[in-house]
Figure 1 (cartoon, rainbow, N blue to C red):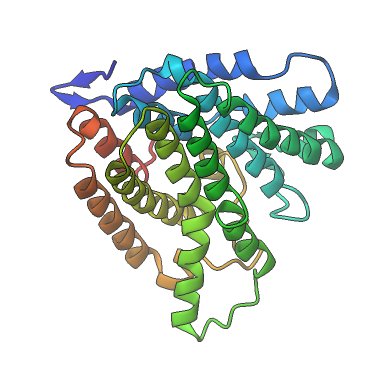
Figure 2 (tube, rainbow, N blue to C red):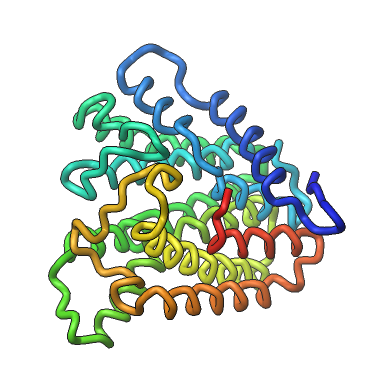
Length: 302
């Protein structure tokens, strides 16, 4: 149910309600034994967050008439994989962060070896979860293929590798090269998992290929805008509100802010959101909430 005030979507209440529902599902599918790895898995997954990616899975399915009850494992799968990526991103060999969502990162809480293994376990279990959805098997196979493509070495991992392994190696005088590299990083590191999320829901609901193309374009644009906003927040946001310490500058990473400046970066993000809204105009049943979520990508006040 989507709440409205003066005929406008109350996104704050919607996200709060949906995140509570997602958290109930996550607790259901997380391991419950007392091993250190299980504890680390639960700690990181349940540490907080808006649950945007699981919500996009739900919306992707609902656009095409499939209820979230049928795909509950897939809803959890994307959050499992997202959390694995955050655990590994925070490691000393990667971004070396001490805080995540306002709490000590996994390796600070449980040790580096346990954090690595907890991330590995979440990654592996995410694919197992998608296979448990109550839909025809051909859709499950297609969804898993989609998930692997966007989260694997041609997708999210490619973006992370370029972002991490090439940090500080850029010739910033070569503006054209920097722009291309930066877009590659953000398309793969951030947009890819958002694409996977909304398309997994749609695929499991039996969406046609032409509709998947539109959802891909929508997610591409809001994912880029999300990362631009993240680059800005990394420098300008109150670190207590952000829930993590800004580290891009410390790690000499290429960002939209360092390349374009704040004003141009904000303009680019707004243009991407406008394009995203045009793409989803045909999805009447969920058009309003998809538009509101697009705006939220660059205006995260709650």
